[in-house]
Length: 185
Image 1 (cartoon, one colour):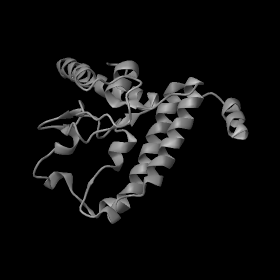
Image 2 (image 1 turned 90 degrees about the vertical axis):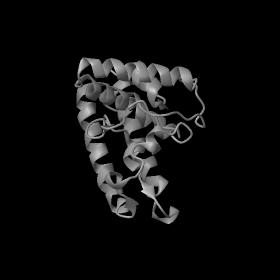
Image 3 (image 1 turned 90 degrees about the horizontal axis):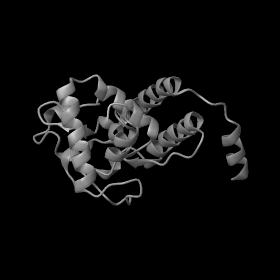
């Protein structure tokens, strides 16, 4: 453990913009790893209840890193201003309704404020966080990607966060992270 901590403190600092590029690479690599499992999942375009999984306040429990929140904020800042205001209101409402904060328990769930009916995930192409990349509708538990894949990708993102911000960065509930670190929020 000491060796790991020593290695973390001697890592070269990376600028946030460079890290955002590296985050895209991590996400792309993770998408490729997960693709082999998604063949066994239902295609989202054929779903009879689009967005039900993202809007299910008893299901969504996505925690993201500071860097992922910045990436989401950048993606949201490219949307029309009126839509940005609506999303910011949904983020604030989710934080309030579900009593979310930096200390929120991992068991606390919420409806995702980034899903818009009729459009879908607003950050699907750019900024989609790792847990959402992994999610798909599988009929059999045996078809799910192993949790170790997500754990390994999140560890890479965590190490990248440390190189950018030089201190431990907790994974926060998605709405809280975007509120605190998303540039447009």
